[in-house]
Amino acid sequence: MKYLKWVFKDKVGHRDDQSFEVGKVTICDTWDPNNSNWDLRGGFNFTNEECALRWMSRGDTLYEVEIPSDGEVLEVRNDKTPGGIIVANKIILNNPIPISEELLMDFYDKSKLPLSTYFECIGLLASRGYYDIALTIIKDKVNKDNSKEL
Image (cartoon, rainbow, N blue to C red; front, side, top):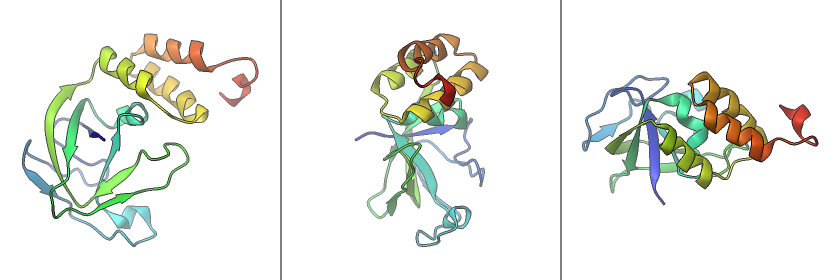
């Protein structure tokens, strides 16, 4: 499975704002995988292709994530993105891909998200100017039986 991380410029975290260099190991400042407090657990969050659409608000560039052989990985249970939150103490980011409508549509086509998460994506996509994808989701997912959930 391909792992992916959204990044703004060269910053790898929405909490710790840690910088990285492409192709080099980046080690997180905090790593306590047994801590029940998400903010104190630390690590770098990333996802997979089936859940990447939900996380597009976390960056303007997408990177492939490689886990070093001595890296620790944890999958986080989450109902909004089942199987789509992975955390590691060390990552290597490679192959930067700028965000584009084509990329996002490809992720939409591959996505396997709960209906409520698609509804959240509609607003997120529209706020970033990706109206065609937001409208596609509306056409594909919204009907008279679930429109009150919006």
